[in-house]
Image 1 (cartoon, rainbow, N blue to C red):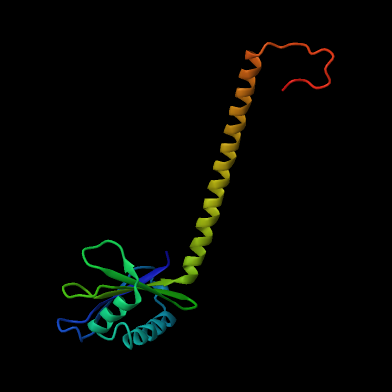
Image 2: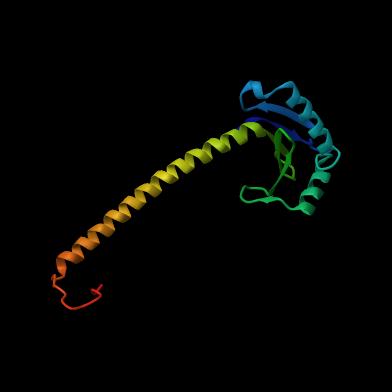
Length: 164
């Protein structure tokens, strides 16, 4: 999937603090210096707006949509994409749980996986389509043979066009 890890964010009991924890999820090689630098820049930009504090996050969510179905509390989801990375932000406005998760993915790995999955799916599709065509032809051939054995064969004399 290209997962690198996620940042778990909590604004504290008063909603104005910024506690965060990094949790790696993918191969350690993906957690590169370039990624760490960009992650820091993305988090800093988000802290100027949606992740400024709990009230700012709540206002942002309620005014920008992004509702995620399910769960015991309404969550909201947003995606930030850069050239090499995808950041998926899940916001949970309200007290009593962590307030946000920023999950990070390597887009190049995701692209590679998508190409592999698509190629495999096309291969499976082609096999099933071939099998389907063979089954249809076999069924059609069998129906023709059944019809031929049921009809009495007659010799047509003096006609230009045989009956179908």
